[in-house]
Image 1 (tube, rainbow, N blue to C red):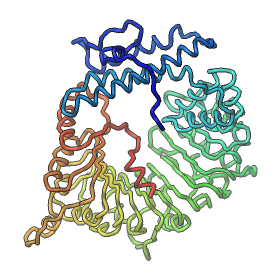
Image 2 (cartoon, rainbow, N blue to C red):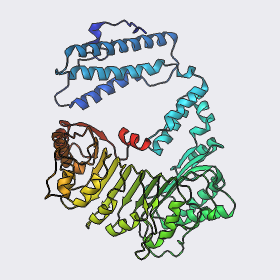
Image 3 (tube, rainbow, N blue to C red):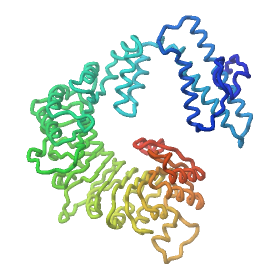
Image 4 (cartoon, rainbow, N blue to C red):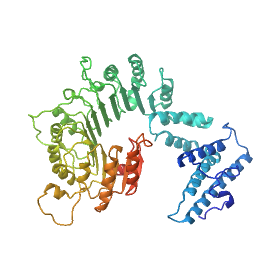
Length: 562
């Protein structure tokens, strides 16, 4: 299809001119401003120009024609600037054109939205667009705001949004009692599966009495709840919730739709002597036929209930051993969850029994992701003797410090040959550790490394011939080998960026370059001179990207999707 021809005057799209027909000044940056500050100021001027007085009104036919003509001029300006930039050729400074193109595209996006005929779309298509707006949000607070904005825009949008119950079925009770907004969302969801989130902590505290009233009103909706996430700051809140869930089971209210259940205690994790905090039978022992995701954080339950069957994710954190499942019950849970895909044990796990060795390790053929945190070397060995996961692709070790973990690495050598993503946070090791080298060398498919708070000796292992480390007094034939020959991506915490910079540069020298490095964005970049220097050096040897804590990279998504 031929490119549409739009009228434009080349004198109006010179890189120094940003605003067409509005007496704009040349793009000359004041010396006291950085380039970022200058562009932000210019962008603010453009927004004021495009919005005008900010009062909504129905445009006349003449207004529509004028806005369409202005939009066409913006498109022409972008094409012209891009063409002029290409004429300059590589190696020359194009900052002037880059700034002008950035601002021209920004202005186009502001004008284009004024003439896009979105309200001419059929209601079902507009409703589907709304779902794409409210579903993939970064956090629940943003999701609430987006839903409100949809209903505030115009009468047509409000009618379509309220009629679609799938827009409202995710409810986070974060408004003040009596929670009018949350209950309005829940009423609009009607018969749709509900995704509920309740929290009571320091910033959004809910009294035990208020929480009791809230839970009593929610109990009849249990058969409709698909996801239930609860964050409680005190034992009283946790005990209340567990009692209410147990009472619902006694009353015959069955969690037939429940797919995900998370209960987190966010306060101090001391267990004290709360006699009333007895192990509670979730839903009074009723089966949860659709439950796939189960997470407990600082909360103990009755582990003998049939709740723990056919799970795909088990995430248990911060539990003392005496309140954890026995090793025999833990093995039963693993056997009863043959499709288990993710297992996370963070300062929690089965009870320790040195005098009852396992008869055989359970083969978890579907397990893909394993996270181990805050384990002693002896306890970690004990846990790993009870299962193996030949198809594991994502392994995480966190806070393995204060002792020699070499016996654990000896046990794990050749256990996980398909590992592609390895996370190591705050792990102690001795320099040129043979056991760790042997373990790392048994994972030839490793392509993604996530690191934080590690000594430089860890990175040195990836630069040496593993045969030399394991057998330093023997001669080895050429060519030299290297750990993780497929390693392409490194995700780095700012605490180790200096080591990562040296590591990436040396991997390039030995012929095993790292293709890309992601760096978790620190909060104090302007003041952190050491970080700036290391980051600048890192950009010279590989492709570098910032990322926010908690987000996932495309490479990680690709590994987990296989």
